[in-house]
Image (cartoon, rainbow, N blue to C red; front, side, top):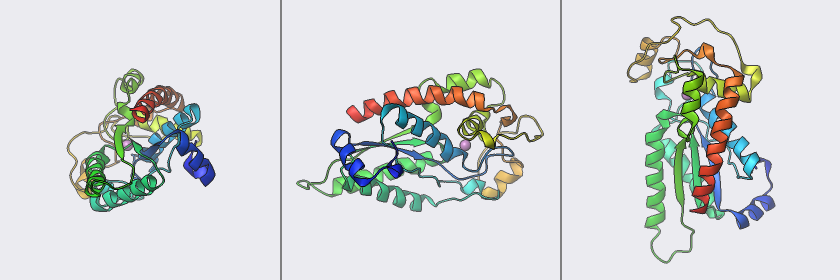
Length: 248
Ligand code: NI
């Protein structure tokens, strides 16, 4: 069930049964020569929507621009400053809370978002606590899960891609997007086959170290069929974890 494809009476009715919502959160940033700019937003979105359809979980619109400063030397990347992202996440949370949502489960697709999401949770909790005793607003709980860390998912990825998974523009994430959007699959020559790895600093330095945008990966191995296996494992784990969070 998607919030964007629902009417307000449907959401009001859903709130009478459940106060929990699943929010995909990611980034719009370069993902190497064959990966889509939307990869880090599309992966959690693809997984969340399938879980939502299978288990009646309400899925919010995707928070699809995040912390991508270090990818800004590649065309198409869009980034938010940490302060902007925290402010936007707070407004999303307060809007949902206003309607009665009490459990916000954020499914993240971008490692670079983690520190800022964690800081945003702290800001959200401050706002709730500073409201003081005796107020009549509902409580609010936030949970963060990176999709690749859902139980069992990395095991599937390691089986599919024992060599060249790397850390950015990975064959696993590219496969997930190609499963969601088969028309996006493309063959692109890459050299070296496995990209260099190293630190992440600023945007210019990133492009110098990783000229085609990949880090330690060989995404030429990606396939929609592999993506289907990864998504299947992720959806199963997500439904179990979301339901536990919603019931806790
Ligand atoms: Ni990524």
